[in-house]
Image (cartoon, rainbow, N blue to C red):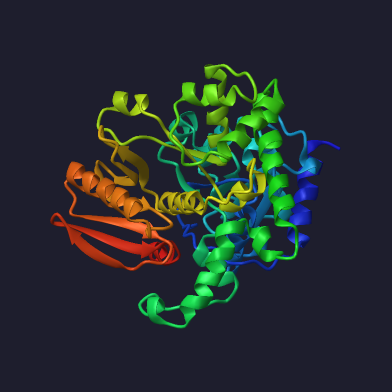
Length: 439
């Protein structure tokens, strides 16, 4: 079967298919602009169903389904697609729907897992530049969609949306749990919210773990992990020793939030396997490209100093940590810190940590533009006086260094604020803070 026949079959199949029911996500994407929209995120975080949501919204606005096409380029039925064969897509689409290239005949093209198609970015650029009256939305599970080369090629032509697994707010919405942020700390709803939060903290927010609560979450998340490792990374980059790479990924997820340099990480990992520093750097970059791990750098105005300081690694989802870590994590504090980081990442701000020469540390410093915007400590349990003193002293040192008057300590269940040395220290539970950040 030639490629045009494959495309015809795929288009016909799409238009005969019913859209699935879905849980609405809280992202905002404007389909009225001429720009190419790219939706990126870790595998199985809900990108495809968000595309279905966008399609439903278009149909709700009066756009005929015949003007809309969704294709998953990772579909075996379309393989192999190479060379200029995808150029036939729009031509075939218009032929089947008897749609001409006029102002009233705009087509909406949704391409899922677009990284499966070689040189997709040049084809997309060509469609955009030739003004073919086609709105293109692309999605993928690899950060290469946002690489410098592609950003340069599509400069001024694309808008990006980064997707994550369900947030805690989306988790509550799925379970039809309503709340009022103003009264929540004092209302009876607090008990229910905290119970749901404890479940979310452990199981995470991957959609299938929420939609299908009876399944074995650990086995499901382990299968996601294997797909990311083998399909999104090893097969893509041709890694010669897959087991060493997988062991490194497991080691990193088992040691989230701990400072490391590449050399120190290599020495630690040497207990498990031998790996060169250059290979380790590449491997960590691959894990970040797949949105599985994220590196956090030390905040420093000097880029050279910043690059010389240790980094911290965080994971996309707490459920993934608990499913694949070498040990089932009983360190609730690190799960709290990981969840707080992901929430800050959702905000779109840059995230760093900070430490001075005296050892005072701030877990997270957020930055927007050229200026730091927020200082955040995360401490699950402040009942120990030494622990509380350490967290406060780190925050005070950070406020003095960044000339800020206020800092936040995220806890398990403590509300309040106090003034110390002329600075305001606020306390807020993680379950409340992540809901507050969403609003």
